Length: 120
Length: 120
DNA sequence: GTTTTAATTCGATAATTCTCGAAATATAAA
DNA sequence: TTTATATTTCGAGAATTATCGAATTAAAAC
Image 1: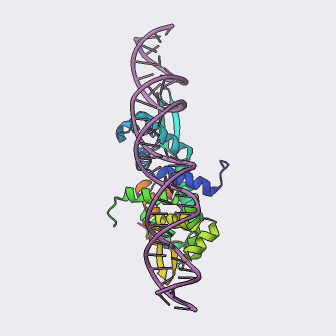
Image 2: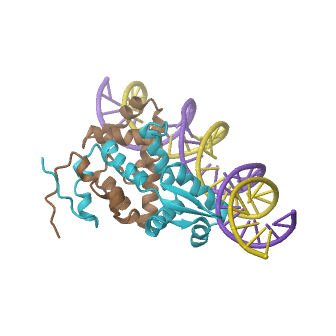
Image 3: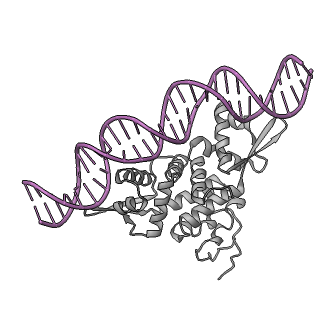
């Protein structure tokens, strides 16, 4: 998908989220929804200088966890849902081998509509 | 639970996994099951010197992702299932706000027994 | 007690990541 | 075309993390 093994990609994605500011930004962007937020607002709302924030956003983007979209002078950053889903799915499947002790029932604690499970 | 806010704890846990060697070790320990593996075997199997591995194991333990248990001279490390579950649950609930684009149906791709979902 | 084995801690260096002001780029408005 | 605004890239210092041999601790065997 991007020339990296799943492990290496996962390490990058985990590292991207393993930072107080970047984790906060990702959460903000999830809350902001598909339109996301413009770079300046992200920097301001977190109290981080624009150049520093730019690096953090680039890190998140390289990791496939956020997307940038230019709209005239403004750059909108938004959460990359498939990217995050890929990470969750890696952690549950590859990393945890789907072990029920870690993975079972996680859906039930979410506000996801309960799956009409295709029973085996 | 440990004097840290959930965010700070999550950052530590993510950072612990955001390393090629440590991610590989965690996966090994999940595969090894509840008995885990002794420190020496982990070091040998990954080709990392014991002192280096000791640091990595300590990092994973501090993050609540593995457990150490001494048995005479040997120290067994095993995956901390509740710890990992806490991380997954943080990522899905707090971080992703349970957004279906990221979280829905993740259980269905696992070998978890399908949940007898308590429909609303 | 001494020796042996397993693992950790120490200590010092190397490598990476973080931070942020200054300079550069991109786009639009005047 | 100049000016203004939004953002990034550059560059360099600070901080953190990684690595691993040597020394140390822990437990058992001799």
